[in-house]
Length: 451
Image (cartoon, rainbow, N blue to C red; front, side):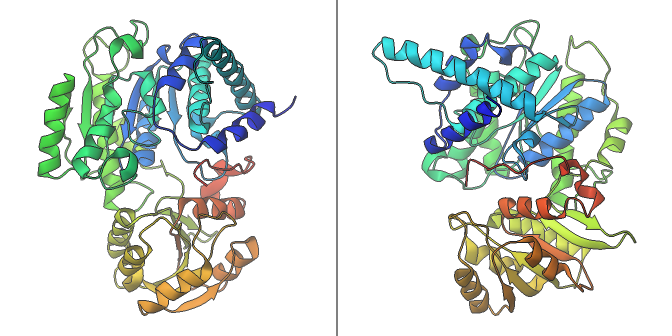
């Protein structure tokens, strides 16, 4: 049946996000452990995982490696999450591989039930992760850059047993699962390299027997850095803390992207220059040049009109940590200016703090929401903005007509922010109008599991 794999994936939404590795391990084993067929680099952190992963995969590809990229969530289509050499997986391949995962999961589940154990019910993210492993193994990739979905130690991607992990930043998030303090969350994220060798299945032709585990750390204060070094020693891993590069130029605006790019450059250098690693050695000039055209979509991304004038700034800043980075970038690139802003946010975010930080940079607010129930209601957004002294010029559910009306007759760029999911919907609306969104033009929208 056409699209049967996608239909199966949708049935997994009801199971939410469940930390743990057992389901992923058992399904991978039933499929011949595809995650062992390639090397892996993990990227974990509170913010900056996606851009760091994207930059790193591009640099490795520029050195002649067949580089895979696994990220989440997506902006428009699930196909974005699974890429090889910047090409997204096709609809046909994704559906076919999802069916393979379904069959393996059902086989494992039957065996579990026969032994008197609970049936196996893998989550949306677990199923998609295994499908990605299958695809990368089929394509014969040299290395996969894997962005963790949540945490690290119990994230499905950890089953790949990578030899390196990049830690981008640490902040309070998912505290009910990851822990109530930043140090606890740090340990959970660094635990992505803590999967025992006999389980992760690191083999000679894939990840290298006895490969030394390495952490590349960024965005940590002195206390957390000390805790990270201590935990790395516990895992028998080395630690590298790169400096922020001063020579990196990126399409994405903001120092935080330079920080993320600096992490990706150091990770690429360590990976390519590892003892015993055959192939091209790290070329810094090539790497920096590669990053000058590598734009991570929807994150401090500028969209210009035919005359080269920036019309839109897209940024999926969805929490106060990310909004702080956003306003720092506005200070640098648009000093003294106030921008019109199209804004929407989810109910579980610190709305007051996000708006308080943005208020000095916004001339007028246009608030919106998507149909998904986790979004803040328009009246809530209006009340909060007005309580902080802001001017709400319009408030409507998100639609193409509403986006076009906000963009119309604008003298300066429009800032669109507050939720990555909302930014994704705007990308779908605008993908045919701006060259910077051409990657999305052949994609059909699909739902994210966190809706």
